[in-house]
Image (cartoon, rainbow over all chains, first blue to last red; front, side, top):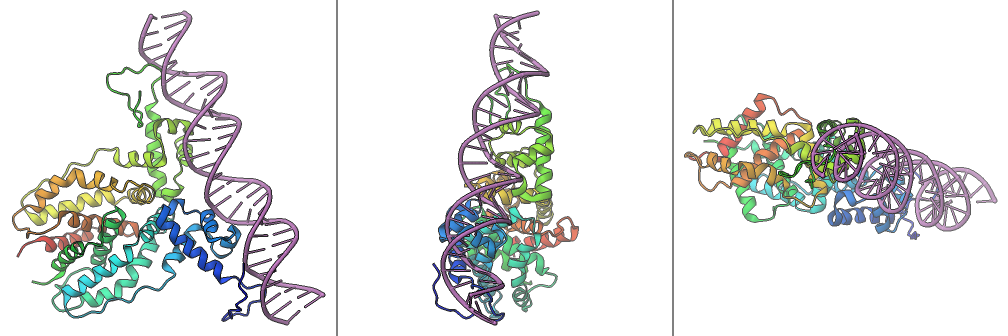
Length: 194
Length: 194
DNA sequence: CCATTACGTTCCAACCTGTAACGTAAATCT
DNA sequence: AGATTTACGTTACAGGTTGGAACGTAATGG
């Protein structure tokens, strides 16, 4: 059912019947639920449409494929704000670890990434969604005094993101404070100057 | 009786027509090719059989699922011998990096792990295939004098493997000696004692 | 009113999955 | 040699998923 709430369309004037925003919302919500419950593979567009109470053509009108739906469901939202650079290197690294853990601690995120990467040999998605948005902040963090020279920021970034991703992907707990502390400890020693 | 992988049970002489070893070889070869070319999802059993010039039933006689075929194609081969512990920590870490790069630097390996982790409830496979066989060697390497105490070996291994894995998954070169050197440098500083 | 577009329902061809049946080929056993 | 056992390819099947097309109905704007 369509609610005649008359939400105004910004930008181009709509000509025909406007798309129901509730369809978008319910589809994306259903996608996240299914990802967490049954994993990427069993999250079919058919299942998404059924759970959302929407027809399959309504889904295909908005997205071209399952990967498209999943990508928007997960990355359509804005990233959380990057933690501040405090000047305390160790403290900043810990904040970085916590931020990455927070983003990957959700099973639907892990399932989605594994599924997307297994489905599309799109090598750039990983970097675009995970690495690139954090690059400037990392440069600020590693630009602090106390960081020894010669540290490749790309490699360091891959070290951090890769470790957390791999741990979550293999089904191990990543929310344990002891893990964050251990990881921060290793990374701190890796970059701190003598 | 035969095992799921088709190997005859020891002691029981084969009675009927023996399985053609060429079928096994061609199927596993085709699997690796498809993984690298089109990714895990599009590597269907049907596509594997067609490329291998073999019928689908011949594949199903040997393996129960795509995950089964992929797992054997990648892990059925013998592991490379573990590098020796020389006593030179930096040298040993470099050997570790080279070994991990050699094992995970191939696109088909990354694709296979992504796909297997995305669809299997058995999240433990990763540890069974990579961590467990090298646990003792890892302990020996990190047990050397010069390594500061309190280093979690699991987290350390996740750092190394995760970094290489992520770099390959994002389509970046991992065979560059400069990369191995940079990675070794970071890991060495991460664990070396004061 | 009329054109345009969205929506749901109903279909469809194509592909992949497992499995089964059939005839043929290759081995062992009596 | 003949019988038995098993592998192989071919063909077929039911079930699921994928995209999309057709059709009638609903909701907007001109």
